Image 1 (cartoon, rainbow, N blue to C red):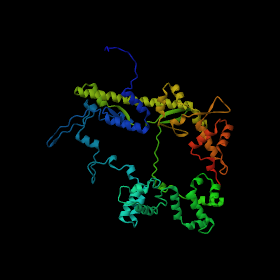
Image 2: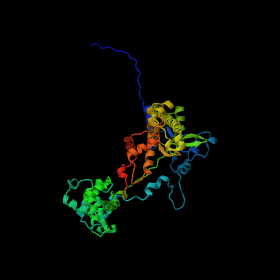
Image 3: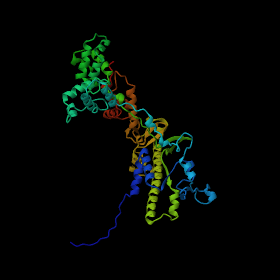
Image 4: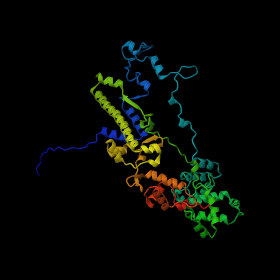
Length: 501
């Protein structure tokens, strides 16, 4: 084998770290972007945050050259209070100036330093915390007459309940490896099942409903027009124990035939079962509503739709004038220090350019969306048009992957409400009256939702009937597509929507 050297020319696409950073910033959501910019401000000393428009024109601390304050024993040297214009040199902070800067408070009866906003508890810390299901049950356990050993086992059982209040783990698995027996756990579990909320610590839905039924008492059945102990009580128990699946599908005749009772008895029993709580832990679920801040606003100004970027709450950054002056004056210190500052300067410039490019790209993409979906903004969801990423990409001269990154996890506020940018990209269904045009799949879903909302509960529309009605309105759609859209809207089938009473 002969060794030799060859020279070859080739072209390669290399993703530089700066380009990777720009792409990452482009696809970040608003909250992630805010966290990323805050991290850049902490890591890069050459990045400076502009607090407000009024402070932008004021001399910042970084722009001022702070002179040294020499202090000798028993004597404090204080610089003269001159403005930079009077002195012709950068302003120096005196000892009294530092007191004013840090906000000392010498009011009588108070501390020497005044408290800042960071010294006080946040709003979240002052809001009363909701009691969880586990805390509620442990409180009842501590007040019970159980022994210390049983309370220890009770805490073990309560700790294994899910958010709905069910015990999904077998007792044998809970006591495995502990000093407790399964029979003990069964006894303590029965005691916990008497706690509030009723039905808690059940192992399945049937047991949960039966626990609630036992708590209500057999005298409840007398309110149905029959004396206590009548057939209706056993009908309820039988339905819960053996026919929950049939009850879910509303197959009342099948249940009546299996139990050898009338359909009216099944209806009466179903009314009581419908009043029971299938998820006892629901009242203790801590549901937090998260506020979505829009990335852009779309408003109508003088007859035209305008896209406004929302930069409220995002750090406004610039290159620190102090470090910029220090670098330009060639007083950066050692070569290592100069190299470090040059590197941080390039990184800071790239971050600022990436943010500006990100903002321009978002406005450009949203403006293209508004152009394609102008009728939607004017009249509503029924006028939403089918749209794909390729159409927007060709319109603004960008790649589809860039459009996908821009529209990911970003929101728009417009007259139609708060909408995710992905909302505007949807498939289309061919029209029967105009074969050249198409209906948006989202508008078709809205039509199905309205049809189901206006239907007769005793005679709900089947998927075939919905497809036929849509056909009369100019939408060519198959029955299986109606079933797919109905499932996406969480609408039950016609048999489950049927009302018998």
